Amino acid sequence: MDLKKIILRKLYRHRIIGGKHTAIENLTKSLPKHIVGDAKEAVDELIKERLILTKSTSYGLQVSLNPEKIDEISKIVEG
Image 1 (tube, rainbow, N blue to C red):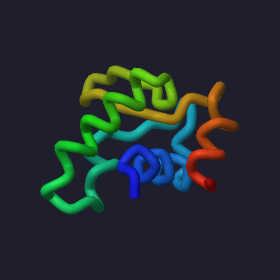
Image 2 (cartoon, helix red, strand yellow; image 1 turned 30 degrees about the horizontal axis):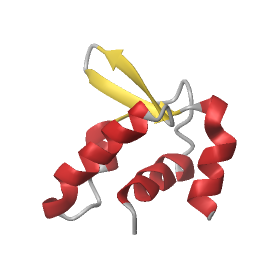
Image 3 (cartoon, rainbow, N blue to C red; image 1 turned 120 degrees about the vertical axis):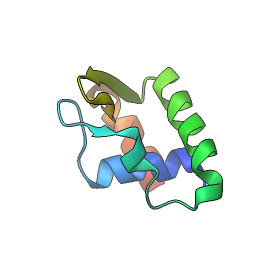
């Protein structure tokens, strides 16, 4: 399965959209250790595609799904 789809599905399933956010490390917790690096690269690509938004906080970088692209994201996750 595609890492981008896994990451988007996890955020979508937990309804981490817009104002609700989580750390990038939480997205890679359930993955095998040998693909965590690839998953972080996939997160970077999703940020560049504007499917994931970033938020800087005092305790680190946080991410959430872009509410403006939720229709596109739901097609990816469910398709």
